[in-house]
Amino acid sequence: MKTNRLIFLLPFLLIGCHSLPYKGTIQYIEVEGGFFGIVSKDGDSILPLNLDEKLKKSGTVIEYSGEYNNDMMTLHQWGKPFIIKDVKIISTGNQ
Image 1 (cartoon, rainbow, N blue to C red):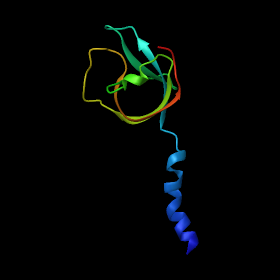
Image 2 (cartoon, rainbow, N blue to C red):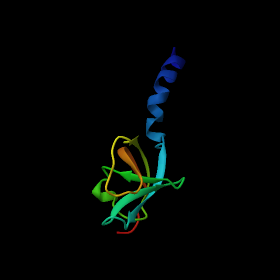
Image 3 (cartoon, helix red, strand yellow):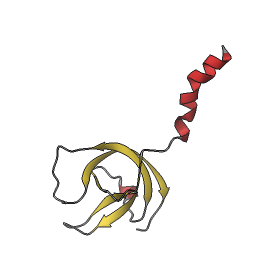
């Protein structure tokens, strides 16, 4: 019976140990008036639609989750629109 409890609790114990599915670096992009974007570890350009002000520092490395918003166009003409659901700072960049 104790083994069954452990198996049931294991997913809940691992929640704090997981990494988020995407990793990238925040960069200031000097296009169309300037804005912050994310360059993924694979080199993809990600346009975060809801980037928190405290994350707007070039060089900040983050892990993040969320979803692409393929149903919209932006004025920036850069990156894929993305809505961030969760973010974890790996290292902080410059102002």
